[in-house]
Image 1 (tube, helix red, strand yellow):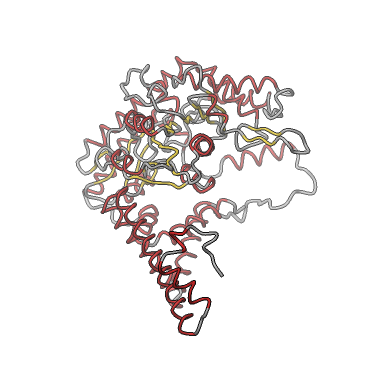
Image 2 (spheres, rainbow, N blue to C red):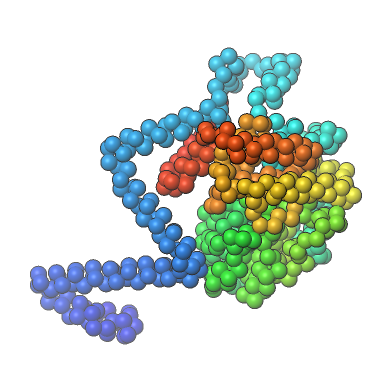
Length: 556
């Protein structure tokens, strides 16, 4: 028997394999043992080499501190997976998770036994009058006072005239579906015009192309998949990687998970809160298809250095996505409203894609966003087509097939009603409110602001007190702040409603901080408990509790 006929000589003639080949012809027990030991040794060496390569790669990209921290987390998780099967530990863990799950359900889906619950269709449809009553009941369930501007982000306007106009558009186009442009030509035209207007706002140029999506997550998913397909077709990349700062929106992680892209998360500068550009440079390799930066980031409201990222993208012939989902129309019109911002849009060479949520500072009804590419050729990589389907030739621009034309109409009518003048006016109001809040925070000795926020978000922490306790005390006064982690903090995002009550926010925050200084605040609230736990238990436990939260969303 000879394997040299089908294998390169430098492999088959290597001493270990020649020895195995010789002794396989006349095997005895000792030979088989030696062969098995040699194979085990070979696999062990291969494993050690792979582990060394992974460790070296992580060390090169992330640096010693973050690499060893990540290694420690992995070892902690491994140890926890072993320990949790000890009966006493398992029992205690299950008890704590049940309690956490119950607490989440009580908060997210409280059960009122006196209230009706519908878990199956009624045998006979209810009357219009009864349904009006039920709609009123559902809309007035206890909730955070977003109408009063006491919520960070979430609801971006409360203008009744704008709401009524969007509702009229929704009613007029309720049955429409852009999947059938010959049936609903008006919706097709409105979608094309929305995309063109957003592309123009971000200086995309005549060669650009984009599509409307259901929200920022879908816009980001589409961009990642598009760059994956581009990398495969143009550069022959079959193991795609993308490089993002740790502050990038989790939609990029979701895209990596969905589309088989390796996610390389690089650290941010602890002072500026911008992406660490040296780490980005080290992470780029022949499999890189995409870099990403925020304008602005959700956690801290910081703009990454898009100009330098653009230079890196050009140098290595890779994509660059700018996430403007949160910045939205506000960041697009900030310059015209009188604020100086560093370059971030398609005027920056190297930018290949930009996402913008029209349902945030575009004030459109929830469920619309735009993804724009620097060329129509790049947009083609987003499309899905099947030409041999028995039902006919199938082609769609994004994830969804059928889409609600009514939301497109609502988006179009909102943009047309406000116009450039309206958006500039609201941009100025929102950014002025954020500046006022930021300056007030900076004047409180025990608080500090993260980085240099330029638009609507201000994130802060305390040098003396637990920031999550501060968050909980503000919640008792009716304010819903967003909790941050790694590093700890909270942020408040200015909107039209919240801009009207910024003075109230400042007064309440000052009062809460005075109470802390005087030692009046000693109890721990829910936020402090959740994020205190998240910082001390393995990620797998936090993920299980997070899953319980998602489960609770579907409890009738």
